Image (cartoon, rainbow, N blue to C red; front, side):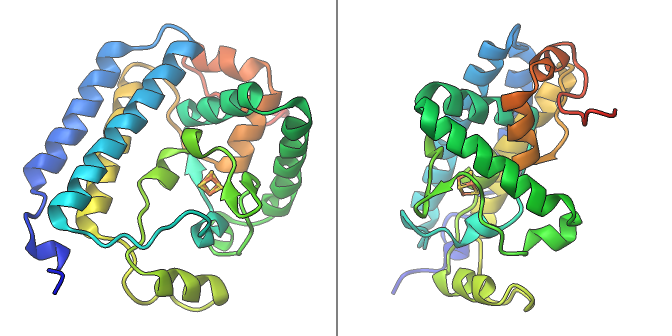
Amino acid sequence: MRPLSRDVEPVTHDEVQAAFDRERHEARLQRPHDLSEARAQTVQMYGRLAALQADVIARADIAVACTRGCHYCCHLRVEIRPHEAFVLAHHIETRFSPERRARTVDRIARTLERVASLSADAHVRAGIPCALLEDGVCSVYEARPATCRKYYSVSLKTCRDAFADTAAPLTGELEDEQLRRTGNAVALGYAQGMEDAGFDTGRYELHYAVHKALTDPKAAKRYRRGKRAFVSTNE
Ligand code: SF4
């Protein structure tokens, strides 16, 4: 019988704290000089996040339910930080054909219109698909933000039920606590280090942030100067 993950080599509070401190220290020390460095360092952080979570999955023998093509969670509200938005925008700009890029920007803009009138709470489970989903698969998988990377479901049923009835309260198993805390330690530690280094680490709704990163030429300049990266035109 598969042992319960919480009974097997639990990840200690000290380990989680050490991951947070390490990320914070690294980000503060590395202080990117330009957007290209900021993107590269963020991608490196994603690699460390993946490695650490893979280690926890193996150590605790966690039965992850996520599979390619399963995208229930891609209908939830996602918030990202500027360093993540610039990685996504760069991926779309450099990896997509001009036609695919235009279609993606259009989908992002249309989704943005749908979510603009919703409060954050109403958007969380409104069942609106992420504009970066293409034929049920994440089109930016290699560049996806930390929120998407660190989320692992342990119950397909919970995800399916939540998707089927977005108004019903969330019940059942969803995430493994050790995995959740480890993923958060890396992403939040890195964000704290970037904030210490003087960069905007505010959380923005995904479509808003990516649209701004793709279409506002001043966003990168503001970010490099330590100002709020994404602002609406009347700010
Ligand atoms: S960025 Fe990719 S993984 Fe994240 S919600 Fe959108 S489609 Fe899903």
